[in-house]
Image 1 (cartoon, rainbow, N blue to C red):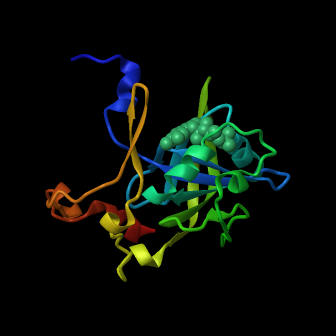
Image 2 (cartoon, rainbow, N blue to C red; image 1 turned 120 degrees about the horizontal axis):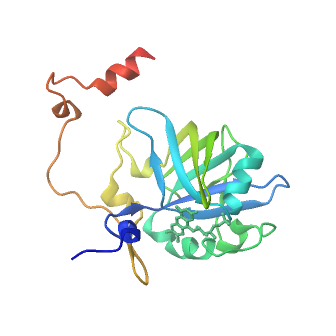
Image 3 (cartoon, protein in one colour; image 1 turned 60 degrees about the vertical axis):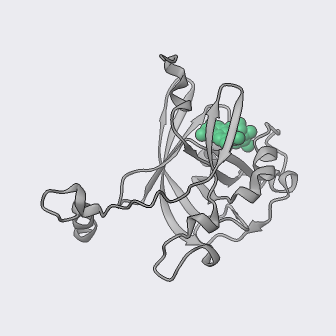
Length: 203
Ligand SMILES: Cc1cc2nc3c(=O)[nH]c(=O)nc-3n(C[C@H](O)[C@H](O)[C@H](O)COP(=O)(O)O)c2cc1C
């Protein structure tokens, strides 16, 4: 079967995060986001793609900050509500019943009850006709201890971080399960040495 090129969004699972920001006048905003990508292991950049008409994008431009919150499946209702196109003066934390959480390095609040919070500072906006790619740097990364072990590894089958499969008429919300197979990073290198760790050590 051959699909239209635009359906490339439907051929792979995507993460679902909630991006929280504040406007220059202090109004809190939250919106679900799937076009989000940590830019290469082991760096600390994160990229998000945004349509031009987004309060989130305007807020990031105005304040230079945003928080990437990783929600659980229990937060689907709030995600649906916060995906609505409320005007910029509407507090979307209030609308979606989200509890704010004080951030350490940015003014924008995180969202309580999430699995993890990445507080980001704007590095660069790459503007295209209809969209922008926003590159942020993670300034502070904190996780919910109830879903992580002492080595900082997520128990993802317990945490159930939300993901999504896009379909023609809507979205199917999903979460990950372990296949039983694993692989060490060193297996990618003929030298059996993880070059990403070497880059990190050089810093
Ligand atoms: C699961 C999900 C993922 C989404 N991913 C994106 C995305 O990656 N980029 C984007 O611009 N909008 C995305 N949206 C749409 C925005 O969340 C929606 O337009 C929202 O109203 C934007 O809010 P804002 O104007 O307050 O920023 C997504 C919506 C959902 C439900």
